[in-house]
Amino acid sequence: MKSYLGIDIGAGSIKASLVDTQGTVFKSTSRATGVETDEKQFLDSLCDIVSEMKDDSLIAVGIGSPGPIDSESGILIESANLPLLKNVALVDHLKKNFQIPVYYNNDANLAALGEYRFGLGKNSANLVILTLGTGLGGGWVYQGKLFNGYKGSGMEAGHVTYFPNGSLCGCGQRGCTEAYFSASGFLHRYKEQTGHTLGSAEEFFDKSRKGESPASTLLNEGIEALAQLCRTLIHTINPEKIVFTGGLVKSWDLFGNPLRQRIQEIIFPIFRTYTQILPGGNVSGALGAAALCMENHE
Image (tube, rainbow, N blue to C red; front, side):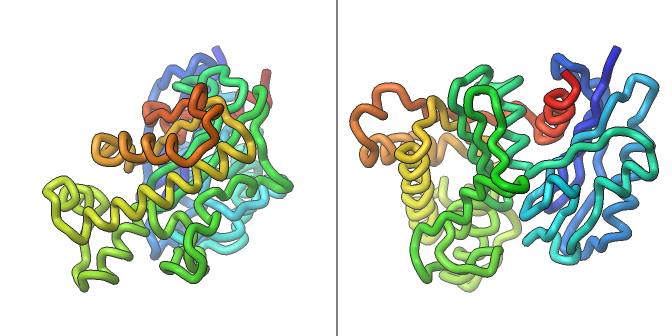
């Protein structure tokens, strides 16, 4: 039996799962991360995970992280939500320590690959994934092939400009879609407008659910920003499906229908007849990272 270890690097944790070629998860583990995580702590956590999870069936390790990255060189260039990590050669580090193939790509790209293999986008001819979490990421699988861009940082959809010189984004620029629809964006803009700090996106959505004016207004503005991003993607690459994944999809009941309706209003009529807008989220980031291994070992 063959198994693959998928590792998903996030702003708050590193999650990992050992899986087979059908996507069956044998075991999982995690390690905490945060703004204070430095390079040594980060690399030690990755090694701890591989040491804990590896067995004789392990064929390869796949890793996904926020970008920008250099997937060819296996380097995490930087991450807005892990600010102490700069030019980290994580692939070489794991290869030297474990003598096993290691593959690396942007986390949103791997979310797309995971949905294409195991989720709602299975075998779609033209699939776009938008990840709604701490940030806003994008991935694209066209005719079975993952689009990487030049060095693995293609489809940074969250940093498509929605409002020039608008709200500050974690990337340092202003007006990105991510600044309007993401956990970090909602929390930053809520504090900016009310002076109050919320502890989580769940708290923000709870306030919106209860009809609190600032939260409801910000959510509606976020829906407009996300709809305009989807319009751009639909009109440029003509996807069959756009599937939304990530933690914010848990609140799909609050924004899903108005988002879908707004997209329908602003796209060409022909696109309304077949473009599917779907909430996903059952495929983990770690499973997407394992799928990257499968792409290279089939």
